[in-house]
Amino acid sequence: MFKESVYINRRNQLRRDVGSGIILLPGNDESPMNYADNPYHFRQDSTFLYFFGINRPGLYAVLDTEQGTDAVFGDDFTVEDFVWRGKQPTIAEEASLAGVKETYSLKELYQTIEKALNTGRKIHFLPPYRADITLKLQDMLGIPAKLIPDSISTKLIQAVVSQRSIKSDDELFEIEKAVNTSVDMHVAAMKMVRPGMKELEVVAEMTKIALNGGGFLSFPVIATINGQTLHNHFYGNTAKNGDLFLLDCGAETEMGYSGDLSSTFPVSSTFTTRQKDIYEIVYNAHTAAAMALKPGIRFREIHRIACLNIAMGLKDLGLMKGNSEEAVEAGAHALFFPCGTGHMMGLDVHDMENLGEIYVGYDGKPKSTQFGLKSLRLARELQPGFVLTIEPGIYFIPELIDLWKKEGKFKEFLNYEKIESYRDFGGIRNEEDFLITSEGSKPIGKAKPMTIAEVEDLRK
Image 1 (cartoon, one colour):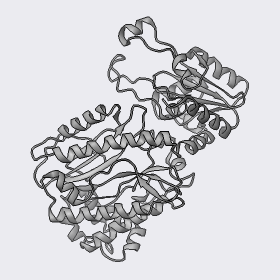
Image 2: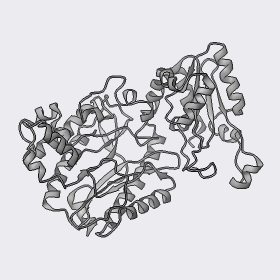
Image 3: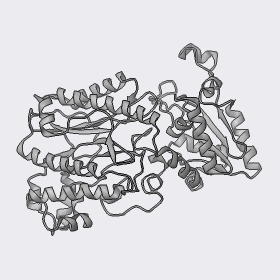
Image 4: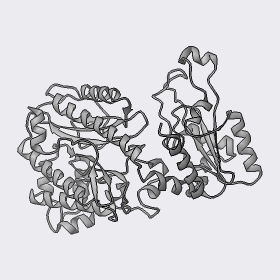
């Protein structure tokens, strides 16, 4: 946990920003895999962690904006629990570390909420992303589960996003730890992958390094020879000479802060000429986007810069044609790059995504509906203290190529005859994490091998 004053100051700011009513913040509970005593790895809700820092299942918190009080609700472990878990601190002991003096049972939570409802007080809560929390909110607030999304507090969402978007020095220290462990994961993979190796062997090693770093994985590992599938979690393929290996993984610190990096490297000792050509285009797009990062620029413009560099590079190879600016404006480049250039990062690898991309990445403004651009998670004006990823890529997705070719889509910009010769290429993505500073930006953590020469040097 951070210092007690950090959590007190965060909660005081939240109460001021919300202004009136009661703020209800549910923590997460354990989720059984197949029976109650066999749960998945526990991960506390990130907003609960941010304001209270207690990494313990079964807790709720209530902040009273008018009385200026905080309380944590939950049931302490019993002696029978200690038999299985060992001696555990009380909720009061853990809450005191975050400057919370009032702790009560879950039964008293229901009584507190009922009293607030009976006196007409507004109950602010965030969008639930777990079914069990939705059902508990239904029970507590008397709102049918299907209507819970219509009852969330926009004011609370905006207040939380405002605070969590700007990373403190303490948070940046944690994020850098996560990124450094993530770099270790990627370097190890670049060194270990050999023809005949199963993808699962890489996943096992990445998990080991993340655990040895003192935390956990920040998200399920993507380790695949089928890089054209953006979020590929199948690990049963065998790597062979000529394949490209795409790795997207990161570590999470004990306090829940994330790293998120991607690398693409040859299974052979060197890239082929064709692989080098595409890799350089992605690398150039990455570099151009990273160099443009600064306060005041909208991330949608960063995305446009990456897209334009991809379109121009592919035009040089004969895969695209026509005016590159017009091709990007029309969305023709999305055949190769159907996703966004980056996203916010912090306590969540896609920071605060559960609160809604409109509030986190768009400052309340509507998103585009254009294919590719609609998948851009971040478009708002950048501010000092933002932490985000830069991760352009080029993907040859046979199913998408077939569909667009059949429809004759963007024939003025796409050379389908040439594209057909790349349909078995796979995909390339390279990703780093950046902090927006008062003067520009800087990469977070130690350097990850990125250039062709750096990658091939590790593959020897």
